[in-house]
Image (cartoon, rainbow, N blue to C red; front, top):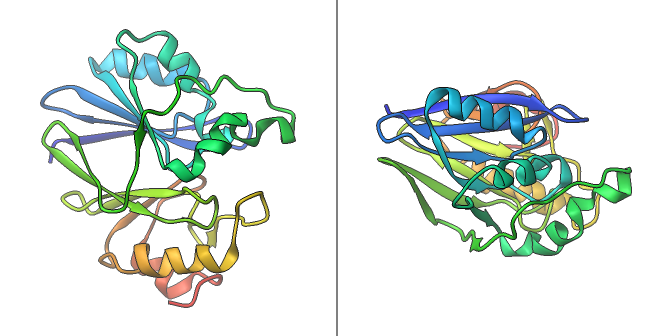
Length: 212
């Protein structure tokens, strides 16, 4: 297994950001560069990894707030990928001004995520699954070889993403969980946007918000 993962809890709402890399090549990506981009950068440099990609599960401010600092320090700029249904949210600084946060959203996304798209990081293949509900363009990243899924704010340990913000929809969120998360093997690790790690089997058994 050549995929290495470093997790961070950053920003005003303790968002989980993930620095992932192919250990053989040193190619790296940041999933949801939440805040304090210089902290993520320092870790990548310490390990000799090159950040070439910023991948967003969705465009809320607490998941993109560190992008500007990372991009400012890199040449060439990292490739930024986001589902097109969240572009308007990105352009609105991730909704941060609603909560009193003005962030630098960094470079404009130039890669559009699509259902079933395969992302390459060195020898690792990562599948994009579209999971609207928390936001219209929310996606998750499934790594079948490693048996794990980066699931953003779709589902948490014993909880689910909120749907009361603009673009959220409860029925859509539940359907996304049932079709795109509960269809994965029970032992699949779920690395969420907030809180501790869980698994598909654990949530199917005990998550009180979703009927499996």
